[in-house]
Image 1 (tube, one colour):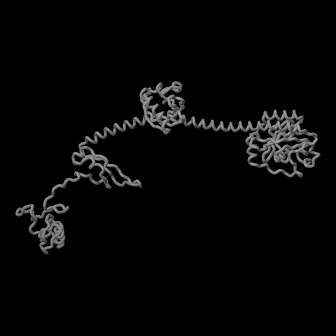
Image 2 (tube, helix red, strand yellow; image 1 turned 90 degrees about the horizontal axis):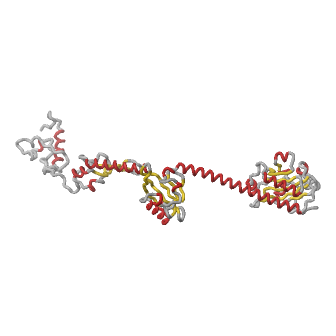
Image 3 (tube, one colour; image 1 turned 120 degrees about the horizontal axis):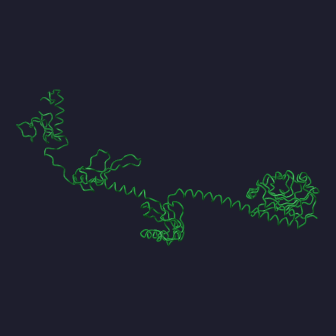
Length: 466
């Protein structure tokens, strides 16, 4: 009896090209059977196949781009059974995978297309019937085949039974692929969990999950020594039953504020622990519609350092303001490149204000481009110190010898300025030589001194002789 084939066989056999469809090769690799030990479930399936169809040999074969791997077999002997693999040139299943349809041969020796095939001449396959194994993606990964060493007239029932068994094998392959994928995901999740536990173990924050009513839903085991009470005594209880009466309302208000605004809320609070008061800085973030994530960090050390700093500043301020010396604090101003650009007065002490008579707003804020610049020493708007009527410049006042003699008052200038080479306090007057008015007595005196000293006749004391 001849069974009609569901695909046209090639008129002449040619060497098979590698079956290198990437999607199909991926599906073959996802089965996890290529190169793996024989699977017991598939072994039972091929044994049932051989017994139900009445053949000595049944094989589940997977075809990749290089070989025919025997995933399970029954009745196979020789080197194929030892190596569990066949070259593609010796595989009849490769033809079925190539065509994607059943391949039924009653007598390979009587068919010129298969008479010289290595499966016939070397492996002794005479009767062959194989159906493809398709995975859910539609790719054909292999064949379930039954073979015999003598000619056999395959019936339609044989092909149908083999197709049903192939569906069972395909379901088993799909289950194995799903299990492998789940195992891979489980491994990734396990690794992520280990990393998360490691990170949580290194955290020094208290991580809680609270609902809108202030009930503790979950406590992450990050810093158990910082918990106000043990975890077993807190889960399922409200903050009013756990925290002090003055802290519970603050916590509940922060939880509801975060849920209402859908924005993180920050707050600080203090709890009295057996080791002493502990200060916490918490961030409350919405986790769902009725739950928040509470992350609190122990800032006791920072709070104590801040308190000590404020106390030190208070003591220094007391010393600063009670000092009897004039003291002012200068701040360094820097430009965009970081270089020192100047100095700015930040504060002055009480003695500075009392001595200078400046108001605090006038004394603070003045700038200096040089650290040696002096601070203002008089209040704005006040007059300078009165000067003598004869003072008309910045040169230090000097009085000539004749002007200081007993015959003339000290306050009057020298009557004969030409005879004085160092006169310095002569007021604006008419020059005795040309009637030209000088700019000031100082300028006239300086010009006269230069002319007098040019005579190269000097006295022992260094003054010019007239």
